[in-house]
Image (cartoon, rainbow, N blue to C red; front, side, top):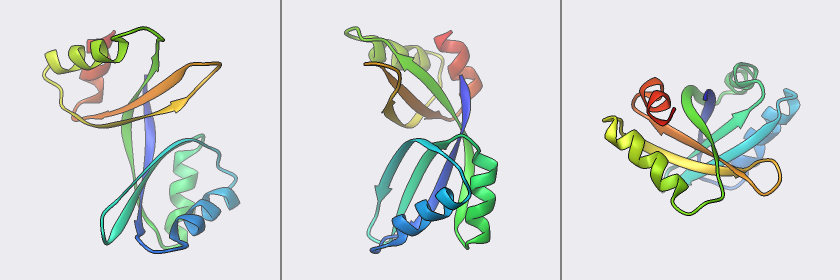
Amino acid sequence: MIIKQLSIFLENRPGTLDAALGVIKDAGVNISALSLADTSEFGLLRIIVDRPDDAKQALRSAGYTSSINEVLSVELQHEVGYLSGIVKKISEAGVNIEYMYAAPSQGNAATMFIKTDDAAKAEAAIG
């Protein structure tokens, strides 16, 4: 399923993550998954939230730069090679995977979030 992901650019210094998460909390937006990456100058927080447009507006009002992107949300099965099979189907469809990360879901399962150069084509490829 294709869903919206919010990406937020943060200065790479103490307190900026806490402040951004505070803005999201104060907007009443719930975070269900996240990924944080950094370079020496900035961090990139990628989050899955229940109301991405509201979170983006709150962050903009607080002076943050953010963007909303489409990502593929895939429930992973607990079987050897399942993720490999998904990646293979996407690759064979000629779609590039830019990045991915996972978060726990119901019970013992996990959800993988996959950013590609063509979410619709990737979704069709994995059926």
